Image (tube, rainbow, N blue to C red; front, side):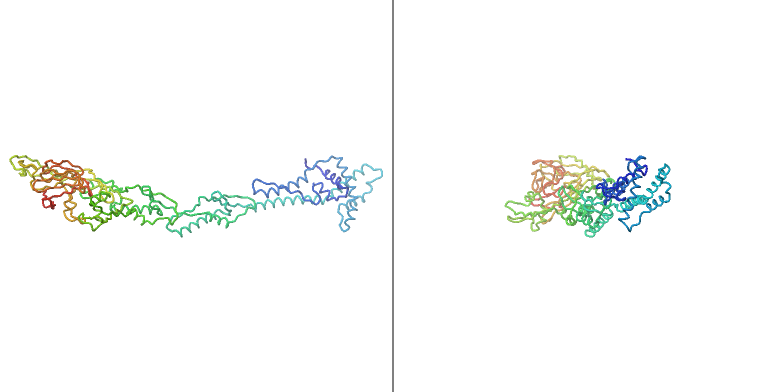
Length: 616
């Protein structure tokens, strides 16, 4: 197909289209429609294309209609010169026939100006049409016919130009309409599902902010979180898209859920409670720890860097503070009503899960036996049962053996410094001529002074271990020299007792304690060696109920001495010992509250206050 190169083709088509397929007369307008490829009474076929992108649909429709019209008008075959002459003659003859017919059909309609002009020109120049048919007259007649044809179709050409202009306007207006109705909308997706469309993503952001404000008012002291991480926004720009802000936000509100972010406190893998935040959890732990950490020692990090040399005698400094059990703090998602009260968590950690334990005394029971059976101290039994005194219990009596065991125990390590005497040594010159027990001083001795540092480990404030770290002699001791008689009866004491521990501190005296008689004195010292208080014979060396590892010495003069709670025994039954001889090492066996020596003096089977007999 090619474009029109002359008007000839149009003329030929007009001539050939003067009758319909049924042989009826066809008007000039109908023939023009045939030339343009249009069926009578039918519009140009609408061509639709579906574009891949929705926003080009309107543009494509306008462009397709425009292309169809232009193609129908412009793309036609080219006629030859002879065909053009034949078409011109046919059109001229046809016009002469068509004019009367058209006038008859439409008497009130004015005739085209072209027809009048043609008739006038033909009348004014009769000389051009001669009988002999000269060549000049024929050429002039052809020119006049062409001129008449062109003038006759002037209105059709004007209409064609107008159609082209209208097409241009439609194209421009269509483009403008498409652009004006092309919008960008935003799809709201929740967990991958499209739940609505909004006009702006800011609406969704503002909606989230408002939801958080509502949660903040409802739960002012709790960190609340919405599941907004499942919300996504996807934009789309296309022709004639719609949105519904209200419906989309309503659907989003139905999808969103809120939860609190708490901190779960676990002890040895067992959950104790969920607190509202990390700060609250730290406060709970600090409260538990603070009961056993002095205020001045809160900054443990600085204390640990101290040296023993910086501590004065009698001072102690905290080196470590922690928990015996494994403590875990884990962020968890919970509902606000599931958060625990911090004060109740503290009480639970301090008292543990209390389970009442009531025991009915059986025949043959004793307090020491019951305490050992239930792995508790006699002191705890006395504290829980105020009516029990002097180990007196009776069959059928009920005892409260409930022990509060903290769920979380505090372990502290302290560095303690103290000044101790350094016991002078005594050089003894044996004199067989002197009676045993008689001592004659040759040179007086003098104790020295030393500075001793200990590392003390405590659990819930009670000493669990003590370790000697260092000692420094400040003043050395001066040795004593004595002459001592050896003429003695074996195992006979002198009647004068020495302290069984050097450089001691007395922690408990003789008399009533915890509702019963304390039969001796309790002594502690950095020097853990236990010495015989006087000459005598060992009559017991082993384990005895409340006393743990103990030694009893008979001094063969009505007196006996008892040494209890030792960790090691250095003597055996039947051995003759001298005053000041090592018989054991200080410990905490039996019914003991810590490392110490329990020392008793008995006279004729009755306990006596040791302080009446002891001398340094």
